[in-house]
Length: 97
Image (cartoon, rainbow, N blue to C red; front, side, top):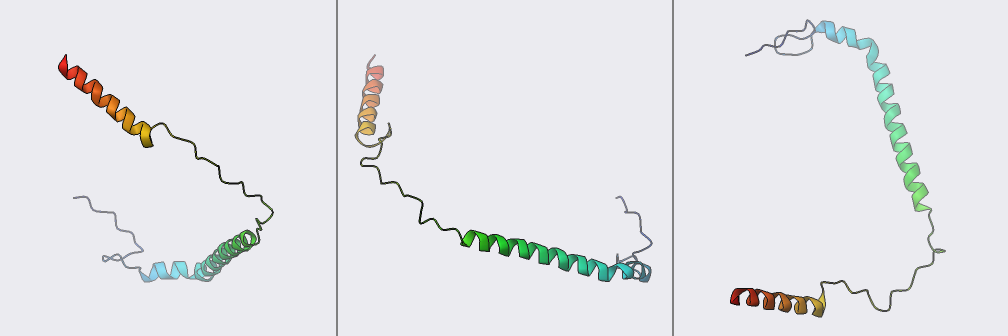
């Protein structure tokens, strides 16, 4: 079983040593402000986008009329039952010969 090399900044239970806490201390405030800035930017972009989309007005866009008769697809309704009947006939003819 391979053992990971032990870092001097962590103890045998992989907790931070006092040396690591001291080494990270000067960056703590800067990292907090950076994180807050990134969160504020993200929330600002999100809220601006929602606000911009909410202002869209589609009342001037003409809505087309519904088609008088929907187009028929090749495998629906009567055609399907006719083609199924034709397939059954073909199968019956194959079995007879």
